[in-house]
Image (cartoon, rainbow, N blue to C red; front, side, top):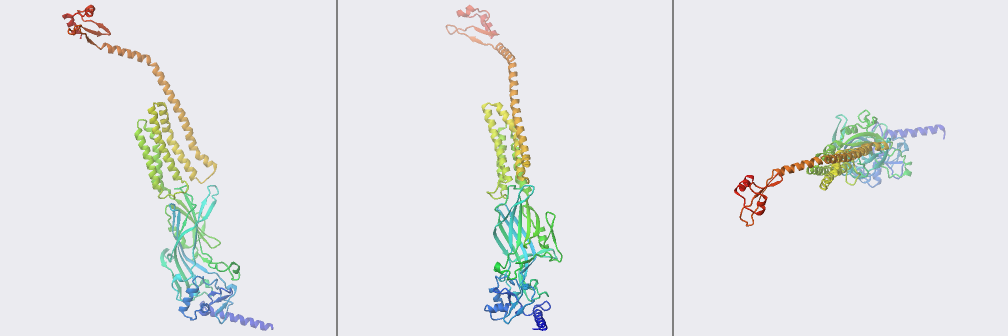
Length: 598
């Protein structure tokens, strides 16, 4: 064949191809539904089928809307659009059976347009150890296979699936703040609704709308890129709630705990039916192309991350994050997109500890501190001291039970609040035990030990409680884990220990010195006390007068009186010792004298 013949043959072939292209994609409108390639042959990667030929091959002979609808619902429901359908309908040929041969340059993946994306709700439940995330989205994807059908139920078409992965990230407590655990939490439940709030770029707000299918025409761009077909496709408004179980969250700082939750939003590969070894034959590029809507409103929008950086993000998502409230937590947000077309939302949660401290923590700490001050009431106030200690213990138990309504579930780590509660109970109980020890020593008469123990408890018990609370707080709440931090945490306790030892020795020496001084004073005052006692006895005897009546031997006659004055016995006047011994009868003078003496 001559060179002119080859050139003429090549020109005629090119002209025929251009004519076919014009017939299929003239002025941006696809002409000839029967010739438009919408389905890729599952057996031959180089062949595309029109919907009519595809349905006719599978037993639907009538080329009408009803047959196309039934064909779609029965054969294409679980198959994604295009099967990597055409981008440019160029260099394509059509045979008599309605099949189209296409080159590899015509192969393109399915393109998803995310026209609205919002995080509606985020709940971190410590009591149930669950995370609830609600995502509201509006998606659109072209599906030329719907052209000529009457499919209107969105549940009767192929739909992409959101893949919502939630990672819990824990940090080390060192200078590097390195992430030591990035664990994918297992999805517990998932619920979907085909109704969702959709962002309005004009009103800058959200309106609830329902999903729908629309395919009234095939208005395509002049490039004939089926990915950009907006007149025939599915618009899905989806609200999806995902619940995951938290198996490894750290609560040791509760109620000052913080958590990092990373949400990965993506779409799984819809072409898993294509074997990996056959992907090259299919002209496989990216598995799925996602348009996240960064430029939906006509300009690129940026989100200010918590670290000061900026990330490109949909305006709808930026607005929803500004409205997002996480119950019981403050949160910082960062956004990003991975090279795998995954949209990443990172939430750093910090629990609002003020409410828990005001209602439970501070009342328990202050009341326990007051309980440690009961030795200042004195030994005589035994019953009031016991009442204060008992009230402190009962109140601490009640406050701890109330705090458990929002605290982590049972069986988790020992939290800061749990340790403070345990210390408070032990100190209240210790103050009560100290009261009974004082009572027992007082009963045994060990006054020295009683006074020393009571004064020692009065000065050191509050200091020990405060230092231990500081120790627990520094060790559990400080970000650093270096030895210097641990040493600093022990300083208050060490100082309290040294002070208590010094106070114990001081009280023992003071009590011994006081007892020695008291003994010396008592020994020096003993002679004076003896003289005072003898003088008092003599004064008492001088003031006492006793009269003794003595009967005679006959038993009837009155006997003389004997008076005792100043320790000496004296007989009445007129009576001698002989008369008294002989039992004689006193004379009238004697009787009168005795009466006068009496």
